[in-house]
Length: 503
Ligand code: LFR
Image 1 (cartoon, rainbow, N blue to C red):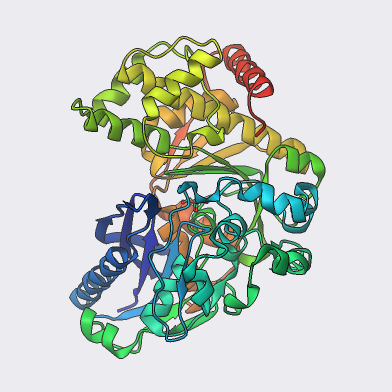
Image 2: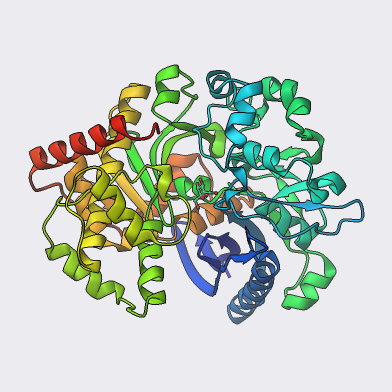
């Protein structure tokens, strides 16, 4: 057949999936062959990832991918793996996993930022790594893990996609886009930061635990014989390094047709910003809490983390546990009719990172800032979506100001592209047209990098994006509504932030 088949493993904070991407000249399609829940487990007061369940989900997915390829009389050309960032597993001298990876939302990092700041001031850390301050950056996790028996026994540290890749192939590497979220990488050299390395000993961080860096498009081994027999795949099947940070793959998956775009990768998080050729490491950028994560093909993902649909997911979970489960569709319909911009909170605030009691915490934030407290689930939902739209607007404004670039189109990719209300409110808040889709941008970006490595597609990011634009269903939202009302609401959130916590 003229079609080539690729498997994309995409692990998100609430579910994992294995997709089969089919690529032919001028054609690109994606089929979900397996989706499985990602259910973190709290044990002994610590929140963990159930990494073995995720691994099993990957194997089941690869088996389904093998069937899909067989049904089309072909084989998989390669496999690519991406997941959320910053978290890692530790391996002992014999290669055994030393405990379940700790979830980035766990509170073990409380206080770690102060410890790091005492050794490397925040200004210097930002100048060296360009990473926005998030309490869970790997540098803080490693600082917090100091003295733990697992870290003491560790011979190797693998970021989540690298860990899955290692189990599938037996080969270890540290993929660069994801490594850039550790806060141990210099975005100018795209290598380990010398400034951080100089203080690593003092912080108890052993950089030699990381296997050598590899880049999107690099070979990452071949599926081991026992994986082939467990999944029914016909070997050899290479694993190709992709943008293994899901957001890096999602940015590849933005179907932009011009360079003057901003993107918002929506899902558990909203990652809103620009694609740049060089990092912005100014003090203004640090104060605005903008990050310079590394992207595919030498790019920089200049963006801010915004709470995203996590706030709504957590509300739904709370309502359900309180015995009043809500139907999301009905809730969104009601929220669309609810009074606009009545209650707004700062959807960039770290106070919303931790799980549990989300409706109460939103109500508390409204109360604290003198906003009307949402009374119903629909009003809370409207508050979350208005607040996200405002945070999107602020991120895109700040990104332009700090980078000197101008944005004419906003692309919403990821799960939130299905949320028509969120897309419409974002267009209104930004006063810019929004192009929504594809929802599976991360898997598509993953597939495209594999396909280019295999020689099935050619070109730089604009060519890959042109293929997305011509093959994926997209929806356009034109801005409407009352710009002045959005500006007033933005000023209110801004005021609340000035009085409240620093970002
Ligand atoms: C999105 C994401 C974000 C990262 C967060 C934590 O899935 O990868 O980019 O900041 O999860 O890892």
